[in-house]
Structures are given as C-alpha cells and as structure tokens.
Length: 82
Image (tube, rainbow, N blue to C red; front, top):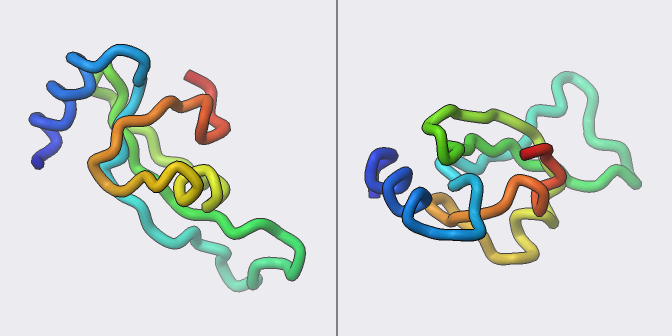
C-alpha cells in the first residue's frame, strides 16, 4: 500500500489520527542505550491532514499492539501529542 492509499484509508477510519509509514531502530548516537533505559524505535507517521511526523517512541508502544508499517494508530497511544 502506498502513502496515498494509506492516507485515504486513514481518513475513512474513525478513531485514528495517524498511520505508520516506517518503523526503524532508534539512533542512540555514539552512546549506547542505558541498561535500564527502555528500548526505543524511530517512526515516521502520516497524519489525517497529510503532514508527516518523525519521532522516537518506546518500542513497547509499537510492539505491544502489534503495529507494523501500514497500521493505523492514535498518536496518544505512542505517547505523542495529537
């Protein structure tokens, strides 16, 4: 499914305000993730208005619900402000 089709699906679906375009490992830079720090992932989302949002979020926020690229989601469930 391409981005345009995903955006159309998002706009037809009530209760969701974003769709996951990409999911990748977070960039911890030259410092490694701390032993007790939660694992994070980088996500690229498209919002209902067509704008994109790039953010790092806890991996559990994506893995817990089983979301994959192309999944519809709520920004609040990822810990992001709508």
